[in-house]
Length: 528
Ligand code: SIN
Image (cartoon, protein in one colour):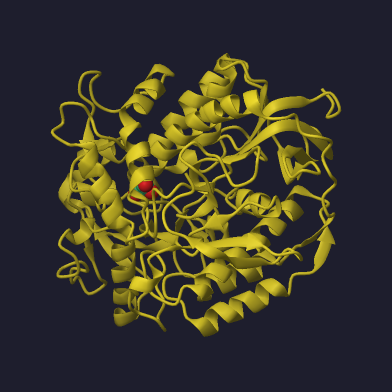
């Protein structure tokens, strides 16, 4: 297959839960679909998700209203109620469809086990393989893709979403192993590339999470929003000073089963901080841990899981248990050292709840998208559900839109030069200045590091990643500098209060020279 022969109705970039849900549904609808990934099909972020899928189970006594209320409470005033209701109400059907594709959740067929995580007032998080939920979902979807003979191009980087002279999406510019350098003509493109955890020195994210989709969307002229809200997971295994890259998660579900957060003196961290204690929303817990680490002069706190005992830890949390044991730590006998690390991009490409962006022919779903579900802080385990629901709907939206849209003209060539920053320098400055606790001086210092990036041609997939990371960092910094208040995951030490005038989403677009700028007007609610 050469790139000249390859054309599609829909090109899906990314093969995590959102991308594969979309690609499989598109194939069912008879669209000519191709999925692309810069790695291998299973090598994205989805497989590392531990906790589970938040969903209201029939007969559980829970309700969609309660799930929506918890989601909005966690969102710190920026969640879009209509979007949340639309996505969360579709949860049970989405989970049934996933089970029909072969995913196996813990519990019996008639009654799935369900647990709690931070910010949830009900036991509504279903899980698979104990704490290996993402891996099971990825296994089932990748298996379905394989048995359905879905075309998946592995090792294929995308450097641009191409548009025709009317601004409509016309294809993708490629750089990679599968097709080399060239163009894939496609009437629609769905970005499902995951997040941007690799903007920071330590993250729970796969190495692939370099902000590619956000950068592709910005360069294609799409509106983005809520980028300042980078969620830090409170309990990531602390591997010692100087450790870099993807760090093992210690799922919040362990706190749902009673684990306690202590500082290094043994004092509880969450007492008196929030009515939900250790199960407060994630932004609250991560900020409380960060404060306590500063007070005690330590780079970590402790998570005491000893009450669970060895057998229960092995049964319910096999991934966490195995990682601890491999490091010589027995979580049944001693507390686990943990610290916050970058985990989730709450904002992203502005879309409706069917994945439509502001650019004709461009769609986004999953972590790269901003539907309004998460607002300023995502509720735990809402993201796998969002990926399933919006990914599937995006395929349906593409089918409906293509039926009434003109065919795009020839794709216009993109500008070959990019700002390609030094990854290590960007990660260090983002971690120092754009993590939990930011101020104007630090954000400006980080922006100076990003602006020092030279213009270059992209020659390798690594260059493409570094260019995406550079643009994504600049966009996050633009939004974080503009929001002069503290809200959700955005904690400004120079503006420590939440301000009513900021109860709206900051939108970011590229200006004429390709610099991310805060756009007017800002959003109140979604685009739908
Ligand atoms: C976790 O297992 O704690 C992570 C779940 C999530 O990020 O939603």
